[in-house]
Length: 162
Ligand SMILES: Nc1ncnc2c1ncn2[C@@H]1O[C@H](COP(=O)(O)OP(=O)(O)OP(=O)(O)O)[C@@H](O)[C@H]1O
Ligand SMILES: [Mg+2]
View 1 (tube, rainbow, N blue to C red):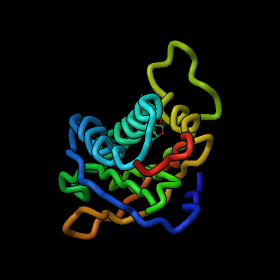
View 2 (spheres, protein in one colour):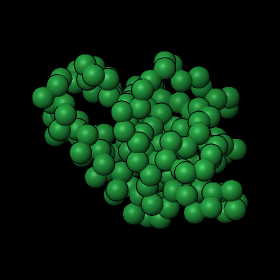
View 3 (cartoon, rainbow, N blue to C red):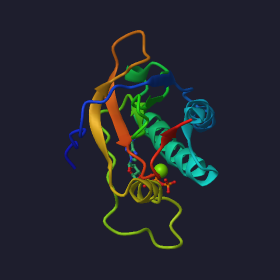
View 4 (cartoon, rainbow, N blue to C red):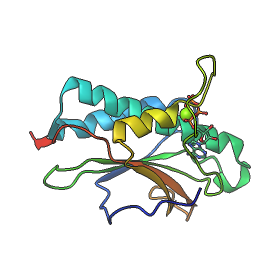
């Protein structure tokens, strides 16, 4: 799979470093909770956004675990949120320091007994295909760290400023 070119130049409103362990999905959900009150967001939408972020962060953790430890130096994934001033479109991205490992959507749905392979299908469904991968540099590391983001533009009812 080739890297998808991120479809526009976005300003990241907030970025957070996440732990390099299984606390990361929880922390990402907490950070998102602090952003969402800025917009009118039904409970169901909030739950979908939390699910989306959880899947992306879990994948990033797994990518880190599979990568050689040295280049990452214990760094965890990062959550990046883009929310334009008019709140018209929310963009979520999760950075990981593993530029060589590329996610791709499976050609076929996993069989019902498969234990894995559903996360990106959830991302695909919740974004209606508006997600992709792009090389990126850490926004949170004190030293330069190359990696990638998996970005997603959730398909949610029009967001409105609270
Ligand atoms: N951030 C990432 N970096 C590298 N590879 C990734 C990343 N995200 C996903 N992948 C790759 O894409 C595959 C499919 O991801 P997906 O989330 O659909 O399934 P899974 O993580 O294997 O299982 P599940 O999410 O159902 O527990 C992964 O197995 C992994 O190989
Ligand atoms: Mg997954």
